[in-house]
Image 1 (cartoon, one colour):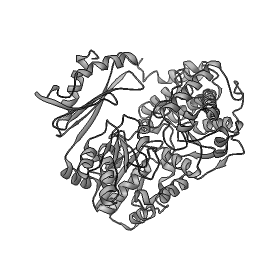
Image 2: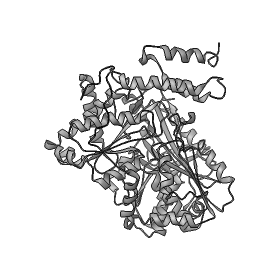
Image 3: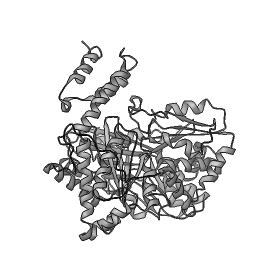
Image 4: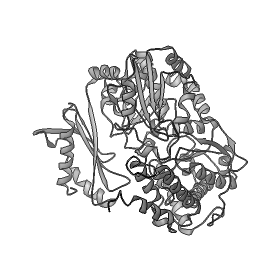
Length: 577
């Protein structure tokens, strides 16, 4: 019997099992959605039944997360029901509260958290929100109960995006935010992001403090209130203040016009008047589906086309990330339109990543970040440096050098931009995240969307045409990335990768049958080797799984694969392949 033939048996086995920990309900949901056309089953009915099982597990799991709680660059992520459930979430929120209780005698914590005392935190409060993930509202309710019992004011945003929540923290002068989202991870995942008073991703000292306290609380099996099996999950506290987070984001944007030069009302009005411009936005069923019409002032224009705007916690079975595969519907829609100017974008579930197209070419953040910098500097007449993660394209470096400006190039992770917030005109990373001066220190798809729209309106060019103009002026760059599984992780992996240190400035590397000289080495995050022709390759360990990632950039369209081969050869030489 094939896996497809025994699908009904496997589903019924899960539904009848009395051992939730051994049941991969969400994996079965993903399989069902993927095979919905060929299974011959009433798949929607079974998906609903399986989600009932997931909800019961989230409410009643009295054990520990199957993986240790760890706060990385973008918070805590894990499998819903197995890692993130009511009890574990309550314990992690308690860990955050206990961290704040130490403020009164920790100047170091006060500095990175932006608050001086627990009483100040209680008064300023916390903004709580979630994306479209299954049971996000339930987990937010648990978090609110813990915070309320500790006397912390709660601003409740409901379903919203990461960038909007960040702006809400700043506009309300809140002490911190709790956002339930695993960003662009598949449907099996849940997540919790913590941002401090600056509205940006938490500093390493903070994530370390939360992780240590959470693991201790879970190890001791402490609970902030009763969540015994069969108990009713507490309702949302009556003391909460419900907020319109998008309005707060809009106010934040308008308030900081002098810094960034993006006139929100004028940009939207420009779209309304420009009858030869069509905009297509794909929300992939994520939280941005709730905001797009309102962002465009609910004009109802037929030139604003919104794809995958229905609520769907399964994302239709796709990995909900801004990818070339997921962009196809946007491209096809644009290509069928008669308008001269075309702008397409895809946004991830929590609205902190965005990728663009004009119907002819796809524009990732590697290119768009440099375009945004050029636009603010040359068209908006703003002066300042550009900030980009070390794995991002060097197109922005070329633009900055020609303009006589500096480049800040930290390791991967948006929180690494903290030293230049308020100084850098643009902060961006190759994984489709961006923010700008005067906005939030958190990546935000919406600010990217407004930038792209303003570019088209102001320059009178489609994005691809504007990019080509920049490339003609500053040079052509062709980035790519890849990764490969390895057999070791952690310290063993770092020890093995130390073998790359033999590739120093002045060393020769064979690429495409030719020797290239390493002109510069950057080792802030793995090892980035820049060659004398301006091409480069970078090798770094994954922070979450036994993988090595490599990023490359060629100065010719057909050179990227040769750089990938060179990276793999280096890994062979040090014994990782």
